[in-house]
Image 1 (tube, helix red, strand yellow):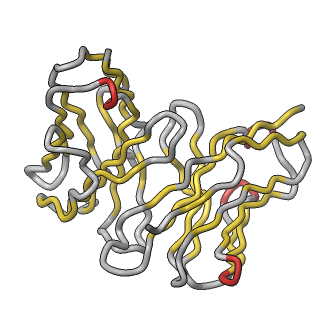
Image 2 (cartoon, helix red, strand yellow):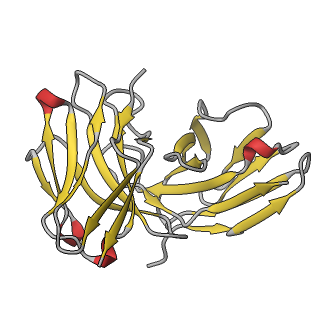
Length: 115
Length: 115
Protein backbone atom coordinates (compact mmCIF):
# COMPACT_ATOMS: atom_id res chain seq x y z
CA UNK A 1 0.00 0.00 0.00
CA UNK A 2 1.13 3.52 -0.71
CA UNK A 3 2.31 5.31 2.40
CA UNK A 4 3.90 8.43 3.80
CA UNK A 5 6.54 8.15 6.50
CA UNK A 6 7.70 10.96 8.76
CA UNK A 7 10.86 10.06 10.64
CA UNK A 8 10.74 11.32 14.20
CA UNK A 9 7.47 11.96 15.97
CA UNK A 10 9.12 14.71 18.00
CA UNK A 11 11.94 17.08 17.03
CA UNK A 12 13.41 19.60 19.44
CA UNK A 13 15.65 22.48 18.33
CA UNK A 14 17.02 25.64 19.87
CA UNK A 15 15.83 29.02 18.70
CA UNK A 16 17.96 30.08 15.74
CA UNK A 17 18.98 26.52 14.86
CA UNK A 18 18.26 24.68 11.63
CA UNK A 19 14.95 22.88 11.40
CA UNK A 20 14.87 19.59 9.44
CA UNK A 21 11.72 17.49 9.32
CA UNK A 22 11.88 14.33 7.26
CA UNK A 23 9.29 12.85 4.92
CA UNK A 24 9.48 9.86 2.61
CA UNK A 25 6.79 8.42 0.38
CA UNK A 26 6.40 5.01 -1.20
CA UNK A 27 5.83 5.28 -4.92
CA UNK A 28 7.86 5.05 -8.08
CA UNK A 29 5.63 7.68 -9.66
CA UNK A 30 6.17 11.14 -8.17
CA UNK A 31 3.00 12.30 -6.51
CA UNK A 32 1.93 15.77 -5.47
CA UNK A 33 3.57 16.55 -2.13
CA UNK A 34 2.53 18.91 0.63
CA UNK A 35 3.56 20.10 4.05
CA UNK A 36 0.90 21.29 6.48
CA UNK A 37 1.29 22.89 9.91
CA UNK A 38 -1.18 22.53 12.76
CA UNK A 39 -1.14 24.88 15.71
CA UNK A 40 -2.98 23.83 18.89
CA UNK A 41 -6.77 23.87 18.48
CA UNK A 42 -6.49 25.11 14.91
CA UNK A 43 -7.01 23.55 11.52
CA UNK A 44 -4.30 22.48 9.14
CA UNK A 45 -2.58 25.26 7.22
CA UNK A 46 -0.71 24.66 3.98
CA UNK A 47 2.99 25.54 4.23
CA UNK A 48 4.07 24.58 0.72
CA UNK A 49 3.44 22.14 -2.10
CA UNK A 50 5.31 20.37 -4.89
CA UNK A 51 3.41 19.85 -8.13
CA UNK A 52 6.13 18.75 -10.58
CA UNK A 53 7.56 22.19 -11.26
CA UNK A 54 10.75 23.30 -9.45
CA UNK A 55 12.17 20.65 -7.12
CA UNK A 56 13.03 23.24 -4.45
CA UNK A 57 9.80 24.69 -3.15
CA UNK A 58 9.55 27.77 -0.99
CA UNK A 59 6.65 28.21 1.38
CA UNK A 60 5.38 30.55 4.02
CA UNK A 61 7.20 31.56 7.21
CA UNK A 62 10.65 30.88 5.71
CA UNK A 63 10.13 27.15 5.19
CA UNK A 64 11.25 25.28 2.10
CA UNK A 65 11.33 21.69 0.94
CA UNK A 66 13.24 19.81 -1.72
CA UNK A 67 11.76 17.01 -3.80
CA UNK A 68 14.32 14.24 -4.42
CA UNK A 69 12.92 11.59 -6.72
CA UNK A 70 15.88 9.21 -6.30
CA UNK A 71 15.36 9.21 -2.53
CA UNK A 72 11.53 9.46 -2.64
CA UNK A 73 11.86 12.24 -0.10
CA UNK A 74 10.41 15.68 0.53
CA UNK A 75 12.16 16.99 3.65
CA UNK A 76 11.12 20.30 5.18
CA UNK A 77 13.76 22.79 6.31
CA UNK A 78 14.07 26.24 7.81
CA UNK A 79 17.49 27.84 8.36
CA UNK A 80 16.69 29.48 11.68
CA UNK A 81 13.95 28.34 14.04
CA UNK A 82 11.69 30.82 15.76
CA UNK A 83 9.63 30.23 18.87
CA UNK A 84 6.48 30.72 16.82
CA UNK A 85 7.40 27.67 14.69
CA UNK A 86 6.49 25.33 17.54
CA UNK A 87 3.62 23.24 16.16
CA UNK A 88 2.85 19.87 14.61
CA UNK A 89 3.89 19.36 10.99
CA UNK A 90 2.33 16.91 8.59
CA UNK A 91 3.67 15.69 5.27
CA UNK A 92 0.92 14.72 2.85
CA UNK A 93 0.65 13.20 -0.59
CA UNK A 94 -1.91 13.23 -3.38
CA UNK A 95 -1.17 10.21 -5.53
CA UNK A 96 -1.36 10.43 -9.30
CA UNK A 97 -4.37 8.86 -10.94
CA UNK A 98 -8.08 8.73 -10.34
CA UNK A 99 -7.95 9.37 -6.60
CA UNK A 100 -5.76 12.43 -6.78
CA UNK A 101 -8.28 14.48 -4.77
CA UNK A 102 -7.47 12.47 -1.65
CA UNK A 103 -4.70 13.51 0.78
CA UNK A 104 -2.70 10.78 2.52
CA UNK A 105 -0.92 12.11 5.60
CA UNK A 106 2.07 11.01 7.59
CA UNK A 107 1.72 10.63 11.36
CA UNK A 108 3.11 14.07 12.03
CA UNK A 109 6.17 15.53 13.71
CA UNK A 110 5.84 17.74 16.77
CA UNK A 111 8.39 20.55 16.64
CA UNK A 112 9.51 22.07 19.92
CA UNK A 113 11.63 25.23 19.90
CA UNK A 114 13.69 25.92 23.00
CA UNK A 115 14.76 29.45 23.98
CA UNK B 1 -13.49 35.96 3.44
CA UNK B 2 -14.73 33.30 5.82
CA UNK B 3 -12.90 30.02 6.01
CA UNK B 4 -14.25 26.54 6.64
CA UNK B 5 -16.25 26.38 9.83
CA UNK B 6 -17.23 23.34 11.86
CA UNK B 7 -19.73 22.94 14.65
CA UNK B 8 -19.66 22.01 17.39
CA UNK B 9 -16.00 22.50 18.28
CA UNK B 10 -16.31 19.87 20.98
CA UNK B 11 -18.83 17.10 21.45
CA UNK B 12 -19.01 14.65 24.34
CA UNK B 13 -21.46 11.82 24.00
CA UNK B 14 -22.19 8.51 25.62
CA UNK B 15 -21.46 5.19 23.98
CA UNK B 16 -24.38 4.12 21.81
CA UNK B 17 -25.68 7.62 21.11
CA UNK B 18 -26.14 9.28 17.73
CA UNK B 19 -24.14 12.39 16.78
CA UNK B 20 -24.10 14.87 13.91
CA UNK B 21 -21.12 17.00 12.99
CA UNK B 22 -21.57 19.98 10.71
CA UNK B 23 -19.24 21.55 8.16
CA UNK B 24 -19.71 24.89 6.36
CA UNK B 25 -17.27 25.07 3.44
CA UNK B 26 -15.88 28.15 1.79
CA UNK B 27 -18.52 29.73 -0.42
CA UNK B 28 -18.21 28.58 -4.03
CA UNK B 29 -16.18 25.48 -3.26
CA UNK B 30 -17.71 22.47 -4.96
CA UNK B 31 -15.46 19.86 -3.35
CA UNK B 32 -15.78 18.90 0.30
CA UNK B 33 -13.82 16.34 2.30
CA UNK B 34 -14.05 14.75 5.72
CA UNK B 35 -10.99 13.39 7.51
CA UNK B 36 -10.58 11.80 10.93
CA UNK B 37 -7.54 12.45 13.12
CA UNK B 38 -7.04 10.00 15.96
CA UNK B 39 -4.65 10.75 18.80
CA UNK B 40 -1.04 10.61 17.64
CA UNK B 41 -1.98 10.04 14.01
CA UNK B 42 -2.24 12.10 10.89
CA UNK B 43 -5.65 12.81 9.40
CA UNK B 44 -7.23 9.91 7.51
CA UNK B 45 -9.58 10.35 4.58
CA UNK B 46 -13.21 9.48 5.14
CA UNK B 47 -15.32 10.82 2.27
CA UNK B 48 -15.21 13.21 -0.68
CA UNK B 49 -18.15 15.14 -2.12
CA UNK B 50 -18.20 16.79 -5.52
CA UNK B 51 -21.34 18.92 -5.40
CA UNK B 52 -24.17 17.04 -3.74
CA UNK B 53 -22.93 13.54 -4.41
CA UNK B 54 -20.43 11.43 -2.51
CA UNK B 55 -17.81 10.73 -5.18
CA UNK B 56 -15.74 8.53 -2.85
CA UNK B 57 -16.83 7.18 0.53
CA UNK B 58 -14.21 4.46 0.69
CA UNK B 59 -12.71 5.84 3.90
CA UNK B 60 -15.83 5.52 6.02
CA UNK B 61 -14.91 2.84 8.56
CA UNK B 62 -18.28 1.04 8.66
CA UNK B 63 -21.99 1.52 8.07
CA UNK B 64 -22.45 3.45 11.32
CA UNK B 65 -20.90 6.42 9.53
CA UNK B 66 -22.83 8.41 6.93
CA UNK B 67 -22.45 11.87 5.43
CA UNK B 68 -24.71 14.10 3.36
CA UNK B 69 -24.45 17.33 1.44
CA UNK B 70 -27.99 17.87 0.16
CA UNK B 71 -27.60 21.31 -1.40
CA UNK B 72 -23.97 21.12 -2.38
CA UNK B 73 -22.82 23.40 0.41
CA UNK B 74 -23.13 22.44 4.08
CA UNK B 75 -22.29 18.85 4.95
CA UNK B 76 -23.24 16.74 7.94
CA UNK B 77 -21.31 13.71 9.14
CA UNK B 78 -23.56 11.35 11.04
CA UNK B 79 -22.41 8.63 13.39
CA UNK B 80 -24.86 6.08 14.76
CA UNK B 81 -24.39 3.92 17.86
CA UNK B 82 -21.15 5.65 18.76
CA UNK B 83 -18.28 3.61 20.17
CA UNK B 84 -15.32 4.72 22.28
CA UNK B 85 -13.08 4.06 19.29
CA UNK B 86 -14.88 6.81 17.39
CA UNK B 87 -13.26 9.40 19.67
CA UNK B 88 -11.12 11.62 17.46
CA UNK B 89 -10.95 15.03 15.84
CA UNK B 90 -13.09 15.16 12.72
CA UNK B 91 -11.74 17.59 10.14
CA UNK B 92 -13.58 19.05 7.21
CA UNK B 93 -11.90 20.61 4.18
CA UNK B 94 -13.11 22.23 1.00
CA UNK B 95 -11.54 23.14 -2.32
CA UNK B 96 -12.64 24.98 -5.46
CA UNK B 97 -12.97 21.63 -7.17
CA UNK B 98 -11.54 18.17 -6.69
CA UNK B 99 -8.45 18.31 -8.89
CA UNK B 100 -5.02 17.65 -7.42
CA UNK B 101 -3.80 21.19 -7.97
CA UNK B 102 -6.58 22.80 -5.92
CA UNK B 103 -5.65 23.48 -2.33
CA UNK B 104 -7.78 21.95 0.38
CA UNK B 105 -8.67 24.45 3.12
CA UNK B 106 -9.26 22.89 6.50
CA UNK B 107 -11.63 23.82 9.28
CA UNK B 108 -10.61 23.78 12.96
CA UNK B 109 -12.22 20.39 13.51
CA UNK B 110 -14.75 18.88 15.89
CA UNK B 111 -13.28 16.98 18.83
CA UNK B 112 -15.58 14.03 19.52
CA UNK B 113 -15.27 12.20 22.81
CA UNK B 114 -17.31 9.06 23.38
CA UNK B 115 -17.54 8.06 27.04
